[in-house]
Length: 93
Length: 126
Image (cartoon, rainbow over all chains, first blue to last red; front, top):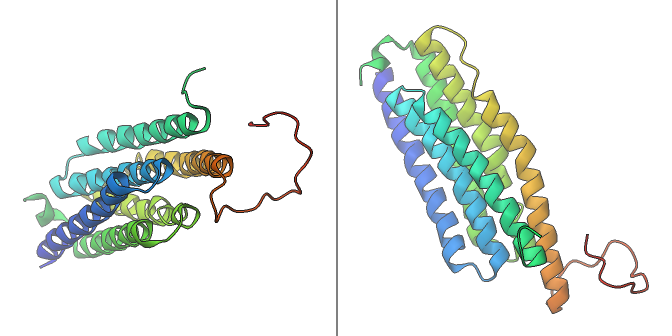
């Protein structure tokens, strides 16, 4: 009973996170301006981090944790670099 | 999946609850990102997912692995601390870049400057 509850709630959480990623992908692809696309990319990264953690709970292996940490780190670096690019026109001056 | 057999009922229920809370909050934040009107409204919405949403999912993960391995598994705190520190920095950089771009192109609906405009002394981009 509780095993089925956990399985189905993990499945539902994955569906909800996938819908959230779809919303972020829409904003990433059809954002009116460049800053909307960067914001969509940031949201996409954090949602992917959460989806990887959910996969880790589903499979019971802690291997997904490292990839979630790396995705979170890349998301910050990408957003900071793209914001710098929007501000100044180049990333490394 | 065989691991769920040795998981007690309270841990399974709490893990499921925190997972659904986190995923639901993340979806609400992303729908806000999709539906809100201007960029300055939109920049607030995903922070719902990056604070409370990822916090709930990390609590679920910590609880699940602690009960499953019968020891305290706390390395998810790393992601929580990292997200809490980096999300405001990244979004404030992005909001300042957007403000700079909008003011340079004189687009309507840009928030006014907080201070009265000083006399122009070159390009004061910090």
